[in-house]
Amino acid sequence: MCGLAGIISSALLNSLQVNLQKMTSLVAHRGPDDDGIVLFGPDRVCSTNNSEDVMADGSWYAGLGHRRLSIIDLTPAGHQPMSDVSGRYWIVYNGEVYNYFEIRAELIKLGRLFHSRTDSEVILQAFIEWGPDCLYRFNGMWAFAIYDSQNGSIFCARDRYGIKPFYYVFEKGRFAFASEIKQLLSLPWVSAEVNRNRVADFFLWGLDTHTDETCFSQVKSLPGSHYFSINRDNLGGKQLEPHRYWYPSQVDVMGDKHAIEAFRDLLSDSVRLRLRSDVPVGVTLSGGLDSSSVVCLAGEQKRRDGNKSPLNAFNVEFEDAGYSERHFAEAAANKAGAQTIVLQPAQCDLARDWNRFVWHMEEPFGGLSFFSNFQIYRLIREHNIPVVLSGQGGDELLFGYERYRTYDALFKLRALQPVNAFHEIMDARNHANMPLKMQFGYGLYFSLPLLRAMRRRHLVQPILHRDFFFAYQGKTEHLRSSMVHKDWHSLQRSELFHYQLPNLLKNEDRVSMAHSVETRLPFLDYRLLELVSGQSTDMFFRDGWSKYILRKAMDGILPVEVQNRTDKMGYDTPTRRLIQQNRKMFLPLLTSHQEDSVLNVPAILQLFESDKLDERLLCSAVSYLSWKEIFEVGE
Image (tube, rainbow, N blue to C red; front, side, top):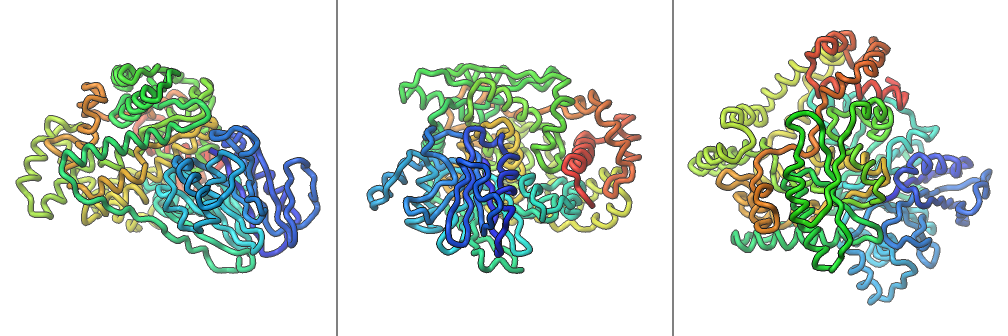
């Protein structure tokens, strides 16, 4: 994992080096092991690695910056920005291409020469050999930019799911990109102005990362599965138009036995690839079905490899009743031959870490679940483990949330299968995470946009400024598109590429990289999505069980008590208690923003005092105000 930075201008810039140094220093947490800057002028390239004041008063067209977290090939050969042997092409890259070893062998057969063992050089050589088509060959997570110093063009790409971040600003004849928003805000021509449309979607509908916009009006995010290419000579007024390079294809329908076996083999291979590392690798383990599957498969792989080093599995446990999954986590760890390390956050942690947490998150958030992850990644790094495997993505891949049962019944009814729908609903009484009556209410809420909009308006109107509420409460197009789907494929793509998963991936990246930890996600191997997309939908829900294909695939690999779990937690966090216990920190924040144009802060103060405010809305409000203060956001 690393931190990227880059600037390209249609005119010469004499402050380019200073700006790049600011941008790279702001993400030292993403890459504590090495850093580098390269500048490109009208007729030459200048590396500033060995001298901080090389041509500091010179003028340049473009520059690249990089912070490195060394994972593959720990030698100086992995230094970035990295060039090919000719010095024409330069890359800055964040991520891991897990099948780099196989691609490297193929490129060597084609006559390509390598000077390192890094996947960075594999990406660079693959691009020179195949152009944008190289993206189809990569299995992993990435955000990278390759600059052609001969013609002044840059190629930027993000992995299929958007696991690794890529933000950019494009205007006034200048283009800048970065791994984190704060890097772009450090530029003198980028202002921290609030994007009110995006903030309205956040407060009114609870939506985040559903478009390429951010909460900052000038900053955009390159979507997953997209790339673009621009040239410094045509950085005029037109907007960038990213191209989508991947839609998941569908593997042919298999019989149940073959589909389950294929899923098990692919998930096992995904774990195998993601264990490739020149540094120690651990696992985050909540005790749920997904993370337990990953830890058990990792344990099996280590035994096959004859690797006797301990596999560390990290779990978090709060003191509150109902917030512990230790029993399940320990069962999975024992099955995997892993050592469980349990984090128990203290009340004082939130007050101590709040401002830093908000700074790393970069945008307002509606809950503290990722604060638990923030704490656990600190513990992981303290144990000198810079890489972990996680079960993130399993619920989106296999429709693991309870609300998906609603769509299962709806799609069966549309397919004129009322008997199947009825039996699945009845069977779910034994294996769902909630009783039938609650499932029915849940189903109505998540299938009727008008009903959900009415409830959201009722919840949020008291905490929003009157003018702001009435200006945006009728704009429900994003809410509707997040809920209305014609079939499983439409729903899956919506959740994976627009709504549910992008938000989780953004937050996961922030909290892990805050502590220089790389998170790898075996469930987001693109081969798994292409497999399950082609199978019968009863591979997701059958006989009342969710994630049927995974449960069957893990038969004999998972402990039975984990394999048959029906409840779901996943590092759940007692948000209300944590915020109420830190009232002394939040009351001054609220008091100092009583004239806010988005929030009705006086009303929030009253609700806060009476402890009657919905915990997610309370968290949204205080995170928004802290975000405004920390990033000095203007309206």
